[in-house]
Amino acid sequence: MDALNSPLLRGSAVPLAGEEIPIIGAEVRSLVTMALSRGATSVTIGSGRDLITRASARTIADAWSTSGHGVAVTIDWPETAASWLRPANRFAAASTDLWIMLGPPLGWAQMTRRLLWSTPWKPSRTLLTGGVSDPRALELVGLHNLTGIAGTTRAGSAWHLSADNRIITTPESGS
Image (spheres, rainbow, N blue to C red):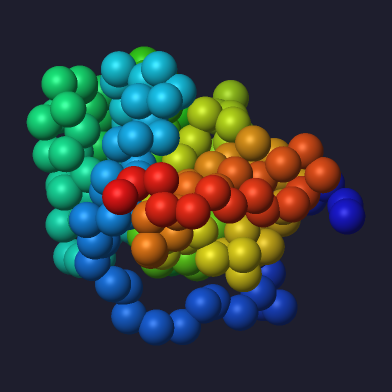
């Protein structure tokens, strides 16, 4: 597959339809477990701006803080924009061990493409919630651009993207 030739998705990209779903306990537990297993003590949380996603970001931040660790910063971004450069720069510049991302898939994909295009952000230091762990959302960015990214499914199963662009899942890590 070709390299990322623009940070913006073009007309052929079809957004994943559906209303955003609030994060559930299994996802939160899985994210905290994965972050701790990676040795993280500080995370940055990035999300879309809709009410449900922002509430889910607060839930993750509260769970992370309850585990005795700090949230470096919480950043949000619009679902549509001419550029995601300002939030991307703030997100990537945070002094943090790990980034956690969530939100509606189209906005997440646009933000992620901007991060790849314009910042030192690394997918291998990033965890995703179930809402953006859908392979169709990952394909909006291109699996070849996301090597090492990891996340949780809605059911709490951990997954990561291997070097050969395969999604490897481990059952119910957050239960």
